[in-house]
Amino acid sequence: MAESSPSIQKTFMNHPAQTAAAAALIGAFVAATSAFSATTSLNTGSLGAAANGTNTDGVTLGLAGPLATPLDTAAGYGGGAPATPVNTTVPFNAALNPSSGAPFSIEFWVNPARDVNDGWAPVFNRISDNPRSGWTFFQRGTGAGGWNFALYSGVGTSVGAQITGGGAAFAVGEWTHVVGIWDGTTPSLFINGVDSGSTASGSGYAASTTATFSVGSYANGDNSFEGGLVDETAFYDRVLTSTEIAEHFAAAASTTPGDYSSLVIGDGALLYLQNAQVPEPGSVALLGLGLAAMLRRQRR
Image 1 (tube, helix red, strand yellow):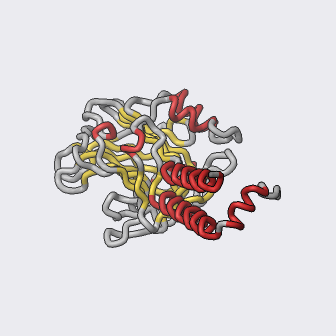
Image 2 (tube, rainbow, N blue to C red):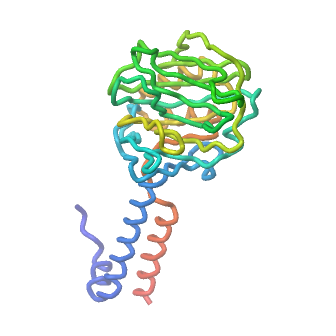
Image 3 (cartoon, rainbow, N blue to C red):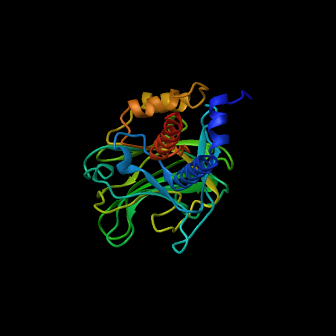
């Protein structure tokens, strides 16, 4: 390890009060960074900070993600309930709830902890009260077809339109790439870069006007994705093409930083939660300014 500058050593040796202040400042920075990374998943989509995700205490960040890029991380959801939700939530945003006839796409990577078919929800954007509106994804497992993309019509509580697929690719402890598409009239589902080939059923979809976007469970904590991992959640206000979806899936195998994320951002993601643990910019600036000010005082 390189030795510190003699002038810096002398400054802090001769000024214990400033040394203590510097230590306190660094400690505050570390604490702020830790708190920030534990409670916020930054949105790198075009909506910016307005679509940042807030993580509850039970969300575990820093787990191994689906991308081959070194240091890629994912979020883990250890299970929860309305009293103690374990999820990542984004406040209602009209841009994430296009009008019923407008197209949109939702993309994410998911790694289930168990093979069960009881409606666990890895990604959710629905009003559950009667009448129901919005949409959600459900785990269906190998015995019931893999993954379900359900949309609600705003009439009663029944599903309006839905599609289920990917059962052959479903595997506990392995990552699956899921893309759900609403083209304005019909849903479709892509699994691991290709069309699932499943046929949609039902009809009708009503955009929500109040739904909270949630990863890991319903917004209220119900139907928790018990022990599962979710990463790279993205929302687009258009239909992703089959070519784009295949490119995204293939890019996950690249070890070059930015290969995957540049495609997601370049293809127009409004919401893109990468679950990266990064320091709060304000804390970084505070640390730099504080240390610089102390050193300036010592040079006078």
